[in-house]
Image (tube, rainbow over all chains, first blue to last red; front, top):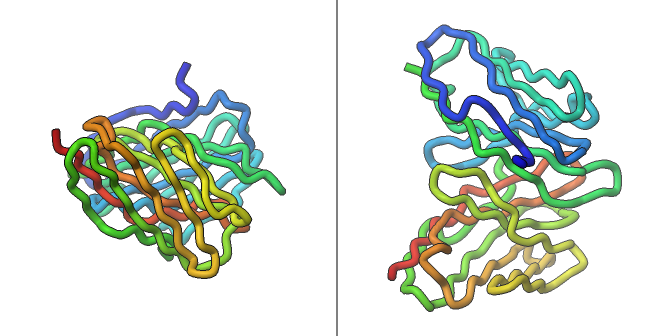
Amino acid sequence: DTAVSQTPKYLVTQMGNDKSIKCEQNLGHDTMYWYKQDSKKFLKIMFSYNNKELIINETVPNRFSPKSPDKAHLNLHINSLELGDSAVYFCASSPLGLGVRTEAFFGQGTRLTVV
Amino acid sequence: SQQGEEDPQALSIQEGENATMNCSYKTSINNLQWYRQNSGRGLVHLILIRSNEREKHSGRLRVTLDTSKKSSSLLITASRAADTASYFCATDADDYKLSFGAGTTVTVRA
């Protein structure tokens, strides 16, 4: 029973294409995130959603559009892919809410390669 | 902007030795967390220490937190080959996100 699952695990695509990465969590958490990990392993927050509402958009280009149809799902759509978008994208969730501070659970990552 | 910074960037030790890595951060926090990432995998939560705690233990892990210096350390005792991984600290402030550093890559030699 995977707690946070994201698909696909690998994605190779050409510049200019549009692609989506899906994420689902079965933990009943209120908050979901997208992180980008670059080639130097630095993890940067992209988006944070709480109960389907966008809380954080960390100066991400508007080619990246997250969508949360319900609080168990947070998908990431990327338009007009560029070489610099190549990275590993991690979805995560946590029961974070007002007054609740605890750990996050991460998916296995999606390695995106733009050629 | 990057909140946490780990030191050293890389660490190589012999099996059975202890590994110590440090994390410094910039702003006030609610808690600080340590995660492990094995090669090609997602991050796994190891331990959480709250801002009003100074030390915490979990198995072979010991974490300290000094809020006056805005720093934390992670000690892994009696290391094993399976401890080979990257270790990240993450800070939880009042902004609905965990802010990560760039990690310390630990290699445990048999």
